[in-house]
Image (cartoon, rainbow, N blue to C red; front, top):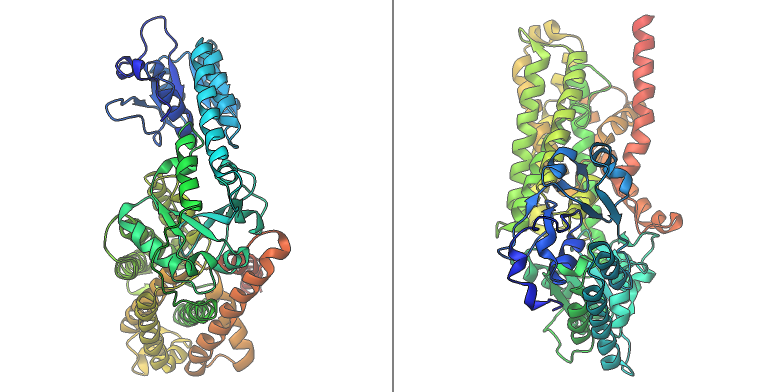
Length: 568
């Protein structure tokens, strides 16, 4: 470890009078400062920085939200950042004497350059030169140790069923080459340093060694079993799957010198984990298409029921905020299952259902007056609740470790996982089938309701009960859909209109057919997204993006047509 031991005692106290007062706006820079023995100059760090034990410093925000007053409260003389100095214009406007220094930390070679730059700014050139030489020497020692050995293909990923892989233009790729490997991530489609990908692309990259970062020790064994279970993955067949939990693997700091040696040990290790792969790409495709079918059926049938209940062609779970309510629950479920032993198949659907039902109750309560529902008030209340739920989800993001945000972002895009847990699939499938059956059984009642509440009541339909049953069934189905795939928009808007054009307005048949058409629609969209992604330079397109791109213009068209009819 690159630490100047003589300075450890003084690093526990903030900067003395006359000494530099440093605010670090990067976890990597904070690590470098303390490893160099310059922690005594650090007076402020970000929410995500982790100074050594017993070396706590004032938290002044993070790189996403610059609070000039909080920064100036610690009286800094220097701010180190990886972001653009323009972000700190507010600080400089108040106190022009504060110096903002941007450090580039994207490649392995950037680390010694950053060390020297820090030394230059803080007047510690000799210390920095020594630290940079030591860092470079440790890396060179690793290169000599692996020279002449076979260079296996190595892939570094974060996550499991919605993975992100290290591309070929970042410090992890440099680290792999230093440790004697070839970066298989270079063959993952994409143009960014970190590439969202999927199991098909990973198998095609054919890594001999796979290293997965899991930030939760409680989840590390689950991640290891996941990757060892793929038959077509070379690393799984030979048992060369390793799980790491150190955050330093994704922070370009001085600790990479130690990790290079550790990585070389993994790449060239003779140890093989016991493995009996049982999961195949074909079976994963079957499960994924089954999940897509369930999601499409749930959203399409729910949209058909809501449009019939409210006599409004714009109604659907996404527009009414039910999807976002379930999304809040799923986000909480993902967080709970990531940091606890509680299985995701239990926490995710339950919390999604709670979020969906609460949203249904709120939207219904806002839109109804004296037992009557105003269809336009319902749409408006859905928009309001959608915004509120979005704010809740953004608030949850504030408390999520930045290394885990990629997992949540994948889900928020409406992406089906590479491998769906069979228990989760069974639970959600049961919810969808039960809710769907309830709606189909009430098809005749929806037909009568189309003639008006008074006519429906006169023919024996209990309108209030029908509304409650419909909202409950829609809530259950939407919760299951969001638990499986995230918030997939506008399926419940597009498919019911297609079905009405094909078979007419009869809900007895329409509720059944809409579910079937929705299943085929979303399964086809999933296949299209997986196969078309490489054509535009990415591994895949989340299916939620495709449905949103298709549904947005369709929603505008329906809205304009509705207003045109109202004027006529």
